[in-house]
Length: 315
Length: 315
Image (cartoon, rainbow over all chains, first blue to last red):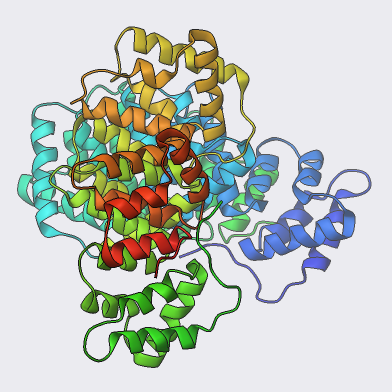
């Protein structure tokens, strides 16, 4: 379930006018902007952008960029983008880093639905004039490249049915390769990137039933081995996205100085989807409510904005 | 340009009724069926299928299958399918063979536009309850599998612009790997499967400018090496689809006993696209008109149908 609280009734024109007012004059009224955009869902935000463009002949995101700064600017601009376009921007910035952040690529590839992933690929191509897989391939190398290119290119079958025989035979293949420590074996990538999520969950469950341990445990190894870590991330994203996100949030908050980028990425991409479930898992595991943890670790408009879309206003 | 001749005015209901009439009574009037379906474009055929279903509560293709037989049956059923669905059927039968026919996979992946390929993947998933790349991966092995999975999963950038620097640097990479006979090098697959067609054409042209020979020449080797052949097919399909198809037709016709499957696949998939250009290339290279060659090599209703969609009726 979502955490975002958005009114059923709203006026895109009024919202656009109020955002314009908040941007005019001396200083910007960030809290006014949060009180509007922090309570509008994706369709409503799109309508506001359209109304803004229509009235002021100006792109709302450009306007926000010129008025705001820092983590808050980045967060609210990402939030205001269409979800598929936002994922395109997030994957692109993940690739542009000196050390590409493979987690963002895998999240997008494995947590979005097959149709959503296609929409991201379409948005990416439109925005960057390259295909997503093309950029992934040119910014990465070795086995991790094979894995990432395969998962971003996938258009998985998307129904709940699965084949029990395949679950058994492929759990066997994975087990055998893990026993041999042949983590680079191409069967890993084939299975993880082409099978449907329902099929993979059945395979992972069968693996656990037979061997009494989860497949990700078998893939522990040198912590510096990015490929192994990426395999585990892929499996976690497919097996249990909410649990995966709760863990990303935990790491982002517990890291020295807070990883604002990861924090805001998860909150923004999930607030309209399943952030309530992620919050519950977070609380169970950490004995502190996610919004309390965030309130403690962040400040200013960035904090106010995250809490707003988390459903807890502190204005 | 297309070869198909279809009237602007037509009545789906009348057509459906006339096809039903041709199927009723003693024997089937194949020529009547050809005179209708052999002169209707994809949208018109779709409307006829819908009208048929509506009037007779029966699927037109099922009806045709039960009335007809042999090469003619297969050809007219493929023809009557939606183009994307037809490609899904063609790739699936190519995969079901004891020796999967990689050419059909590569044609579909590299000659269809990126959006058309997505439509094929969607149709495939709907029809076979697996993703296309999943089935390609489970029916093939080794390097050819890597190549095929990569090209069917691609969603290439699709504009005409390209990067001259990339064309130079990647032509160099390809040349170096060819010199080293490192045909299995992963850069081959990365470049061929992720770059846009415009980019690849620029790269191939630069290769030829610098080295005075085409890249496919450098990839000649053991004729039994399917992976090398598949690399060449990929390059040909991207570089010049019409020339590629003209060659497939030439082989299909010149083989002992005629390869009816390949012949009908090319005619059917291109009749509404560029078969006129393919015909011209065919004539230039073989000194015989394609329709004459086909008329000489085929017979009966199959011949009559192919000639009809080739724009030459012999009823």
